[in-house]
Length: 131
Image 1 (spheres, rainbow, N blue to C red):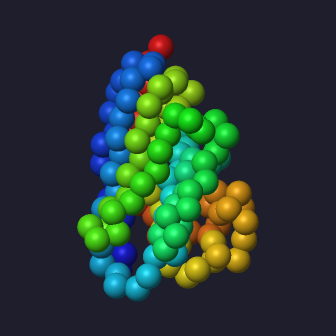
Image 2 (cartoon, rainbow, N blue to C red):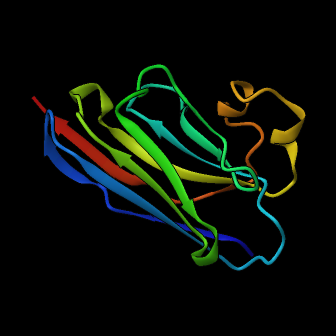
């Protein structure tokens, strides 16, 4: 079974930075796309950033463009999210997700920021940004 384990969350003041990591294990088949998602209390889970594992192509939600950077190390089966200039509205549980079915290849990059194409999810890591 696939395991996705996030780490790196914490509490920071507005303007600060955090780097999230996601370690993938347990499945030798290809991951087509991986992404970071977040969910604040009382809100739906939303896509933050995705990366196509083959091409390295990335897509970001408008709310994080210019502040967050998604990256991967395929040799180490790692996914990262560098978060700079953090704002209180970035406070949420952050989840790592992976598409092992290839569903993200059948849609636009913007559509791939939705939760439906991802068949494996981590347990999440909390990010809290204070003003």
